Length: 158
Length: 294
Image (cartoon, rainbow over all chains, first blue to last red; front, top):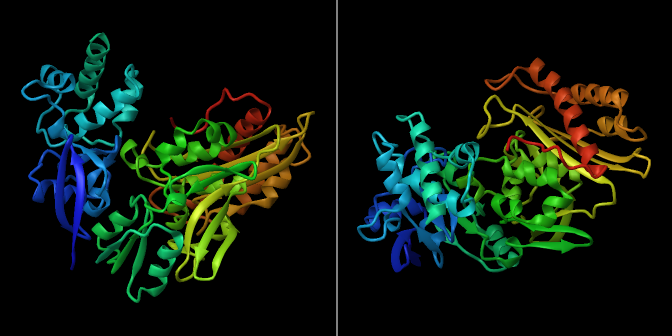
């Protein structure tokens, strides 16, 4: 099996890696690059725990080959906070206690950020549709939706 | 497994033709990677077609649109002109999966996956869309309904790849719609799907129609009898009754966990009636009704 050399930008930094042809981007991020924020829930694109952005587009990294990412810009949860300063979404998730076990949280934050970039003033229904690709088995979603709505409001004022 | 990323359709076709093992074409990967992951397929070669420029573009073609095989659902939804001309097709494509899946999934993939329940396919069939195929013997163009031949099987021959899907020019006073029934509000597979496209004359009489059904037979069906029920009418109650009857009569569904045979036959008629009404309103220039679950 021949290894493939890939050059990407991850969270703004140039990153090069070597991967196998059948390795997913999720496995590359977690196992080769130590970026373990993206989680593997289902491995089949149903749960959204592995959500990242590729060239600004929200995607399940379990459904992307590592080799495909060559030349793309990838955004992961590790790039969300600005140093020590949390992103408003991250802060609001803490304030609203919008997480319990936390497995789904990185994926939901990445998806929520993509949602608010596209639609800075979503209705509750739009938030629920926008996050329909992210499963949470603990919270029942209400606190997550409230946190996203609150963060959106704060980001609009900023 | 080997991974190749050709930059022309010809190179892609040569790679596919020469491969002695199992070879798969990769665009969005929302079906292929799931199949690889679950062990359903073990490719020797994966050919990523996203570096081929023709697969990435939506272009005007003969008054209609040419949609590259790797154009994503999200990109379709952002194309204002396409949405205006073919709202039913775009809505059908946008019903597939989550936002994450929309960022990658393609209509050509939906077509080649050959699921009878594929959401975008009835809308494409109703639209009279054609698939442009590149293979060892050059290019050929066939109606999309001739691509799937059985669940998971297509009519593509060894070395053939779909480069794009072509939607024809829209005559004035035309409209289309796609509706599906799912037990949830989002993120589910169609129990029944119906695509309807109509063209009206200045008096509101239907001069042309195409009707297609999904998830009620081994492949998506084009139902000429259902179209006949609309043509020559003002799509009034009698015409809608005849349409519903023709759609139910065309169904050859199975019983499964999503719905019984009887239920699918009944719902096909109900959805066809609703989709035809939306298509008619759109054709008459009234686009207030929205199809689909979003």
